[in-house]
Picture (cartoon, rainbow, N blue to C red):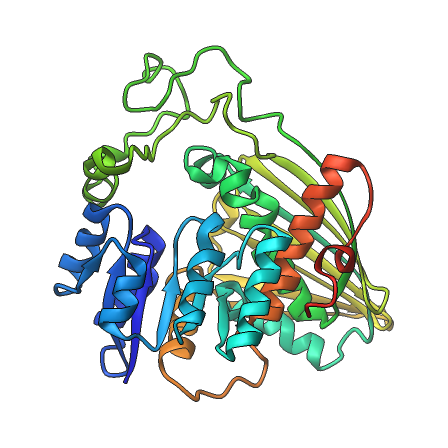
Length: 406
């Protein structure tokens, strides 16, 4: 039975890892320690999961509990720190996406992995979605021939999208912005589908909707003078989990879960477009906004023998449809439609499938769902390069940033 320690008592760490390990996968895995600088949140996770030892000193946790693997679910800016310390202590690492937020941290993680011989797994759960998996299968079968271009539009609504502007993600120094924190999922899926390496990135990005776009704003929703008139007001304190996990722990680190989405301290973009040239000349055109009336994505993949069109809705009118469809347009003027029943569970059935692959060892993986450090690096470096392109107005070569580390 493999022993796991959790670095970061986050909501994701709690729901995705701690609870499943101690309940669903207890015959395969054991959670031996929980580290966080906020002891109250760590104790919440511990108490729910049966009294797992809590630590405020990461190295002490490693020394006293002897884990085989450390699961890193901290704020993104610290992923590299705990992953590197874990590998140097002899542990493998499971790290939440994004693997890290800039090229220097990325290189440090890759170099440490190579030096220590330990292994990094990056948890790109979206690969495991049955709908996304079916597209992968069709592409592997060569249904549209050689892939030439991809058009990918991702739209976040003003519930999910706005939440990134309430939390720690709103500062680029913490998250790398949405092109790293959020789009790492999307870039990884494209990389996985087309099986090419990204090489050159050009991007534009602005912030037009969130940030200081209105005068009627406060520090946080809970104490805001405009709570009765602001359409973005939320009262998370009424939710028992949110109250216990965040509001009751504010006195430890001063972290507010409900900061104003119109704050002047916000420095991440809410409107982005990216163009990527790949190693075999495929071109990706990608866009992301965070303020749509509904949420979901649309994609078109063009090849020498045809075109795939697919879309998925996460909120709004179309989310009620029980099935999803993939349309293939071939050179014979035919349209072939594949119907996939919507999966249930976290992230549309993806989380449970990823958990099984993580905690039940030696399961077959014919499509390569599990992502290693190279996949993690290739994904974040599109976002990192996009950020640099936005800042400079220039196209960025990924190799110029990473060198020969891969």
